[in-house]
Amino acid sequence: MNQNLSLDPSASVLLPVAKKEKIDTVWDRHKAMQPQCGFGQLGICCRVCWKGPCRIDPFGDGPKLGICGATADVIVARNVIRMMAAGAAAHSEHGRHVALALLGVAEGKLEDYQIRDEAKLRRIAGRLGIPEAGREPREVARDVALATLFDFQNQDHHEPCTWLKASLTEKRLDKLAGLEVLPHNIDAVVTGIMARTNVGCDADPVNLILGGVKGALADFNGMALATELSDVLFGTPRPVITAANLGVLKEDAVNIALHGHNPLLSDLVCEIAHTMEDEARRAGAVAGINLVGVCCTGNEVLVRHGIPLAANYLSQELALLTGAVDAMVVDVQCIMPSIAEIGSCFHTEIVTTMDDCKIAGTRHVSFKEETGAENARQIVTLAIEAFKRRNPQRVLIPDFKETSIVGFGAEAILEALALLDAEDPLKPLLDNIVNGNIRGIALFAGCNSTNAKQDSSFVTMAKKLASENVLLLATGCGAGAFAKHGLMNQEATLSYAGDTLKGVLTAIGEAAGLGGPLPLVLHMGSCVDNSRAVQVAVALANKIGVDLDALPLVASAPEAMSEKAVAIGTWSIALGIPTHLGIMPQVTGSRAVTGLITETAKDLLGGYFLVEPNPEAAADKLLAVIDERRRALGI
Ligand code: NFS
Image (cartoon, rainbow, N blue to C red; front, top):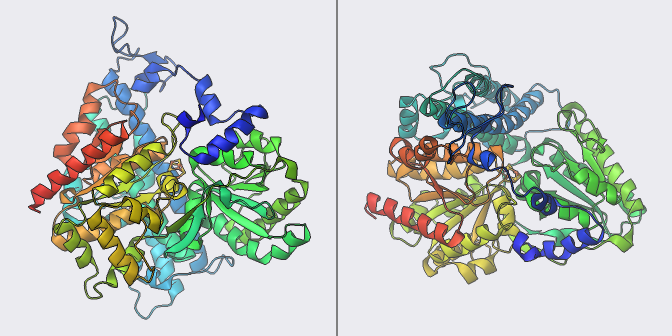
């Protein structure tokens, strides 16, 4: 039965443990929740006021209007754009946190952080129109941080967010400006969505959805600045060889799992853990300290430091069921509250660290940037103490881990291409797209969901698209899925890539000194790092003088689940990228909204949602989209 829940081989080892120990997992709770509310699934349950909840009857003779008179279209639109606002808030709050840290470094207030990539800082300054030549890095950093924070403060509606302006093609900016969906201030746009969806406000589904698109673009802005400024503080990813899946845990080490999203704390834990190896050994951990990652904090430390990835979203509980995790350190987002209960069934310290993200029943170390290194030391000490309490009898580490070559940000991809053509690095990529060696590009992103067999569609679709010579990029838990299933190594390229794609990946990999091809799927980082994929796409589009909606580029989120994914998917279509969803979005109770995002969007924006739960059929549909775009380009 486990085979229907997850493709991850670790699940088949550890779910029986959960059963034996009578520990419920996400899959048990999913089962107990059946049947799930049909009104909610269709998006037609309204809870924005206390006259409700109101439910629209989609088929029978029941109510067609909420008590206030709201139609199904209005209810669905309000619900979904509130999700976009929440997603934008989550990513942008992460970004603000990083921007404030950069400002703190620039002003000499944060001793535990440095500017690790000065060259990138200077490039960013150039993009944002900030003078940098001949200036001290800290002065430049201060101006970059202030310009970034202005995207949270600007009150001039006619002045779009700085990062957005610096990140898209001119044509796209014009198109979005024409639709009046360019955000001027992230906070204002999120607040605006909450205000207009309040009871008795905006009741025009088209107007509501356009408001949502603006919120989704604010989400993009927040992600772009989070990614870029994190690179300045923590280093820009470079290709690194590491491993993924629960076999990366070690029986004879203090295992610390870094879980959540924001690199501000986890990066310091990586740094401090090195200095505490002896303490771990004195506690009996022969192999010292073993850091592993979970979800997007995992991806952050994976692509920057090669820290192995233990789990993506749906596997986070499995990590604890190994009995080998001494501390799971969490920051924000995608952290199942259930880990408190599961951790307490073992010796594991679950350590929450952000004051606005606590879980009842766990230990809290209040992280502050001013005391970051000290907080990291406290956390590693807790892990070492917990290790002493570990019961070796209860340790079961599944023997599964796959070699993964990761760390392909926009810079790393361009550097690799520059090895083929130093003068014009994009030319080899473009030439190979034009001559058909690369048929198109697909970006896999997004979560795991219990509404699908974990990781399965990612793997099926990637193998099929690669065999058809589509270049594959990945972020977030999608990237985690590919890493765990061995699709981010050279063997995968040799086994699954179509001949022409294999040729291109081999030429680049060999030039880069990898002694073989690039991996089949290029790991670009965490979910906020989707902005890295846009950077590559914008460079390509600018090179050939077209807009993003002309490129043979598609995106796919086969297991989208979170509000953040709703925001990302929406900006993806707003940027002109056809975007596949493998899970039915909760909008189908409104024909108007469904039509708007799957059809009308194509005319308005070039991008649109394509919903297809079957991975084989989804891959075929994406190939058809790629071919349609190629034809339109005349290639
Ligand atoms: Ni993205 Fe990353 Fe994963 Fe989904 Fe959650 S960890 S930010 S939201 S579940 S991909």
